[in-house]
Image 1: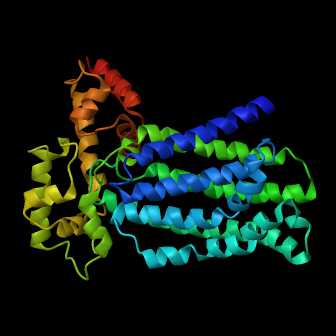
Image 2 (image 1 turned 90 degrees about the vertical axis):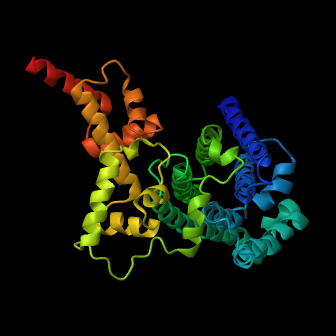
Image 3 (image 1 turned 180 degrees about the vertical axis):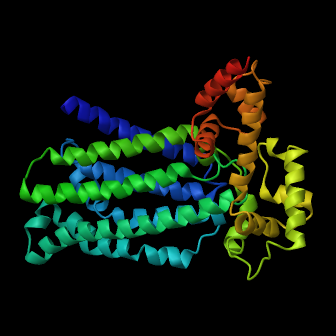
Length: 382
């Protein structure tokens, strides 16, 4: 058990350091990567604090733990700011600094006394004992609040991306959404294990938190290797929607939009023509702005046409045509000499995972199962 725990600890530490090293190559050109590196550094301090209960490193309880305990006060604001800067390129320094005030207060009333008094901190007066219990609890509540805000903000921005792009696997930061939910679950596990420790002082309960933290580290490490656009890319992956995001106009409905007007009917017809006859959906990096330019209308008008009148968004609308084209090719048998993935790419998809997910959402079965059913039906007619 000890060897396993040691392995997990060292792997977690090395993974975070590796990711910070990756980010260091791009943070001069991307402010967001500086924030993300700060998140990972805070996460490392939190991880080492939990690991200090069994690692025989003298500096952990005396140097790292007094800071790691209050890391939860800084992780939340950093995650929230990271999401904002990714989609808007703006940092409101005054607001950001104010959000870090709880961390500063906790550092003054908790960390500094810890550094001065050392291990005897918890054995001092009742005030110190109350502070040593209250600060970690408030830190959890503070982090939970910001994780909730971050999740709502990320969900809102991901919706914005779907309104503008037909392929979003490099843009929507789904990995961050899952990681935020993972941190929320960690807070629940941490509070539960803390209450259990008060009732049943079992030392092994600490390992549960540690193992779960390692899983979250491995998760973000996996995406650190695969999400090249986050960790390695030098240019901004979604610069074309940042202006709309900062102005927050694209997601606000206009006061009136007559879906039964002749103008709407004509636009709908034109849209169907360029998608059916010109097969515009085959363009993998197709965007709302590009489509609006072809129709000679504003991207805002096209967005409202899709959202309000067709009860859809650009991502769903384009991928519906792609799925229908894929089904047509399979049913006609014209793609029998090609792999399913080749047909999917020809239909406009740029990712196997996205294709499988979207196809199953719209059709209800996997592409492989659909192909088998189509083959059986064609054989029965022969």
